[in-house]
Image 1 (tube, helix red, strand yellow):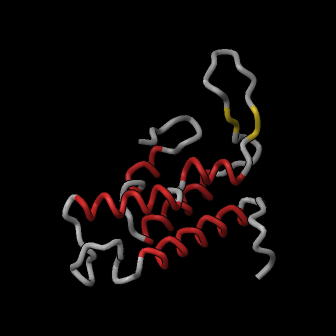
Image 2: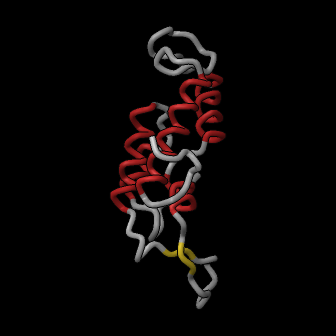
Image 3: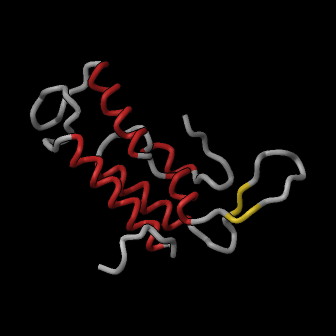
Length: 126
């Protein structure tokens, strides 16, 4: 489980375990609002270790659920008895969307966030 830290704002923690597109969008918005290119640093946790700049891609990786993590959360919820809110069936779909569509939306949200931070996702201009 991801824990809050100095570069992981507390307000994103509550939505990380919620497999819904709106929650992912909220994670991306919080990451973008918290992004400060001049202050975003990382460290290996060793006392006195030199800090290095975190790229937009690294920052999003720490703050926004990964595609693998989202898929695992959805399937684990299904195994625990959760069902799709629209179809009332377990099987990986979320709010009536197939799992693949849901994960594609998460990938797009992550790419938009990275682009807005000045990173490069290889998507190019719209």
